[in-house]
Length: 317
Ligand SMILES: Cc1cc2nc3c(=O)[nH]c(=O)nc-3n(C[C@H](O)[C@H](O)[C@H](O)COP(=O)(O)OP(=O)(O)OC[C@H]3O[C@@H](n4cnc5c(N)ncnc54)[C@H](O)[C@@H]3O)c2cc1C
Image 1 (spheres, rainbow, N blue to C red):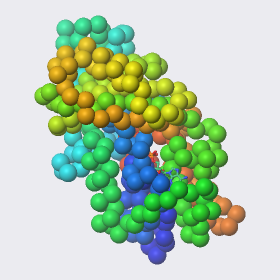
Image 2: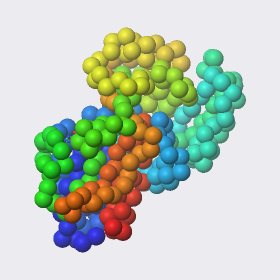
Image 3: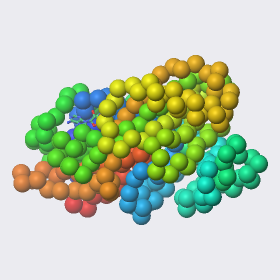
Image 4: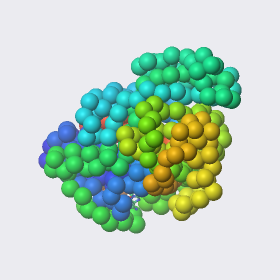
């Protein structure tokens, strides 16, 4: 890419910020336009590394592995909000672990006696857990240090950005209107943030296609408890009943959580498609537009891999 090129990135969620950093580190001047700084969906994520509610498998595998390597490096710096945390993923069925889990550090199948009551299979592993408010702040600072600039405004179309030679569209669910993508649909998710009664390990249940999830992610002083996955629902208001059900499910597995104080609720709509959209197109006026959205329940997990693909597409155009 020509280093004198100016790039506008639409979106300041995990996709936009990570992509902007990768582009700025390649030497180009990057300007972010976003109506939410940082993106609300990204703030709502738990967030654990792991491909969930996202396709297609092959590229998702490659992107996830690349991000895994980056998160493992970032975890050396506590200011990033990334930690490598040991814990258990369990199931109430005779499930086999997913292929990607087997290569995680510390992977070890669990004996049934090691699992909470009612669970019949599971494994232990060490994975990156990302404290999203801290991490998004870290990404914003890192981009500022690279000379990146921010502008808070809502765009009704890509025309609001031109004239620039390159636009990168990381608008998450916003892409449904911004680039008229009817395939993109929301899967609503809700988390409860509580004080940490002393947990150092994560726990999550493989709940398959159920809308009721179970995850317990300790982030130092707080624990993020989840969750839900409600198809075609983009209502971002608090659902008190869902929050109570999340607390009940988590306390059933870790009774110590009954003493935790509720600190906050986080709600977001996972931007979901049949395939993540990372592709380049040339508009009639000559502007290059690279799309990077539709990461479903795995936007954090895919972020570094997708951002590097955006850079490659721009170099190869
Ligand atoms: C409850 C929940 C739990 C999750 N847990 C995990 C997890 O554990 N691991 C994981 O990897 N992923 C997880 N995810 C998924 C992950 O959060 C998303 O895939 C990811 O945040 C999407 O990031 P994004 O940057 O594409 O979108 P967003 O964070 O939504 O950012 C979009 C940005 O685009 C801007 N924008 C949109 N439209 C416009 C417009 N017209 N004009 C100007 N700006 C615009 C917005 O203001 C925002 O800044 C979870 C999601 C939820 C909701």
